[in-house]
Image (cartoon, rainbow, N blue to C red; front, side):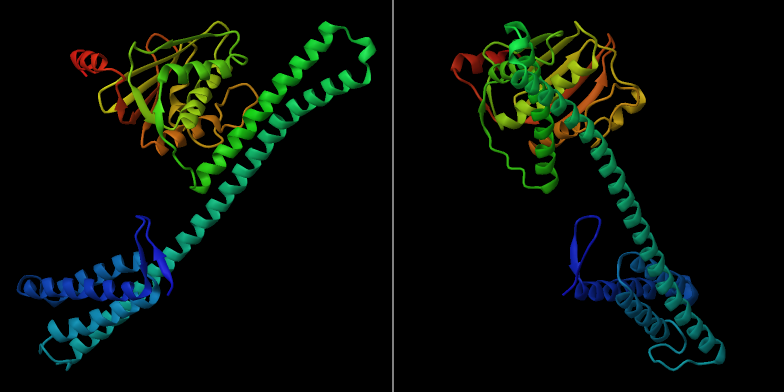
Length: 370
């Protein structure tokens, strides 16, 4: 049995379409019959045609045609004089019934056709969007992969082909270049794999008790190469409770945010990660004192493949969309805003269980207003 899925996520089959269509016509006809003394047969006809139009917006043509036929029969039996039989009293009523049935059928068919045309237009637009995203991804990846690969190949060739012309300092410099390029390449591969996990819907959350101080320290250790000209600071309260989170996903979230800051803020800018709790949720802030984001682009920064209009070249535009996906996987929320004093602020809120390591810590947390 063919099934149909509404935009609300409700899935119904063809049999249910017939039942719902007939049920709607019968229910509305009953209401119109009760009010027939006020609205008359003409008003009832208009109401039934309106309901038929609404049915045609959601269901296939055959259930709609059934509803059209049923509405015509009901209108004849219950509303046209003489009532409660299918005999039409005069020529005027016969013409009126014929016109109603014809209009009902035309209305049903046209509304269904319009919906089919709209569906085809949406599919065409989705295909064009897919092609556009594919081209964007291909262009970004060709640059992001080619650059580190070229660096690795060139440095490796120098190390292998002319070792006699290299002193120890030059060898160390080439090895450093290979390491940096490898990390960059690995970062892009990780982003692609993470996005693939999100798109496939098979992302599994493996929660465990996480120490936020250790988590932030691990993030800073990973990002220190790309943020070597930035100041990395954390502000985690003493005796902060443990939170039930997926350590790997949250490390990737904070790494992507910190790396993003290090790439798009001037040298000597500060990256600050702070944490707090309201007793039922973890609140994280990732802030910087750079130039901030253009206000008109803030609503789009978490979109897949989106890059700021005047940003420097490089990057695939996946980092922040992965951040949003991982936060939503924790049933959390993330927002971006510009700070009044300058710079940007990412706000993260994740509902999570908390574990206090000592009774004194829990008592202190309660006394502080949480």
